[in-house]
Image 1 (cartoon, rainbow, N blue to C red):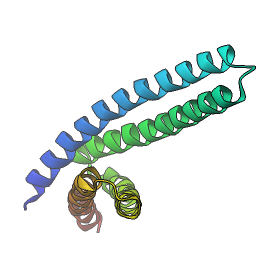
Image 2: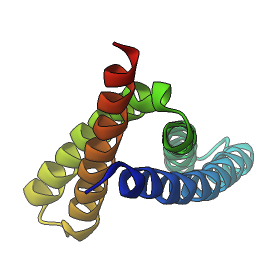
Image 3: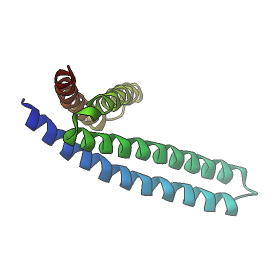
Length: 143
């Protein structure tokens, strides 16, 4: 794979990550809003209150994941245009590899499907490889 192909992959996957991050952000905000509304109406019912707090917690985690996804996408797009962002994009890709591996092991231990985590792992490995190529190009020009 040459450097131009790596830049295109970083750009396209970065845009996809930004779009998915925004959609996840909207889903997380909706989860927090629904959980908050349910908490208001279920103040006297303990079980409903616990369920609404679980929805708020899940929405908060989705918001955090969305922000990380957007930052990852932005760094990938920046790395496709400017070599100096290659290291930051690679670090985020390594973080995504770790979370994908965790999701695979979690899915295997609970008997769930591993299709989505494996796709995430393959995508993160590809982004890490492309970001590393951009980083190496930046370091070779710097010397």
